Image (cartoon, rainbow, N blue to C red; front, side, top):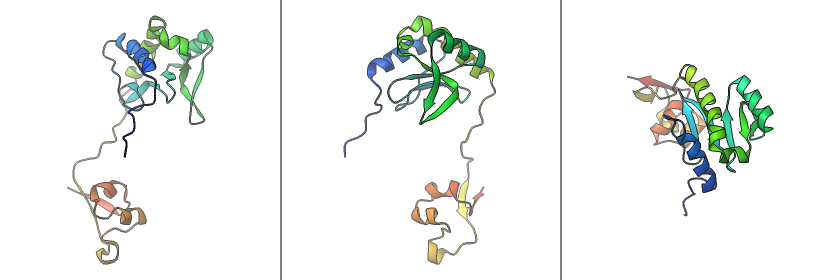
Length: 164
């Protein structure tokens, strides 16, 4: 089976995005399929499927950007993203014009507290009080489908508990 490409975004769009990111010390691009930047666990920008740039800006800066460039709010999967603007294509190519806006969005998110992490705590997940004869030790339908792969079902099963 052929492997999927890392991204469908045109290389020239990624190169323009990388130029803007390079203009801001300490900022790095993440994500293979959807390139993005973030700070404190909060996304500050990303390139969408077609290569359109979405940039997160504080309210006053967002309003100014939209007025200055005729930009709109970013729409993803049919829903507007109220903190992101859709950057016009011509502006993505103009690193000098875009860099101050990037810096404003980055500074805004850097000033906010870090987003809580969702990493799993260390320990072992085991099921308790269930019949292992009929379900293989798993009580709910999704878990039964994952029998034999305890790493996959444990964190989501309401019938499980963590054992330290």
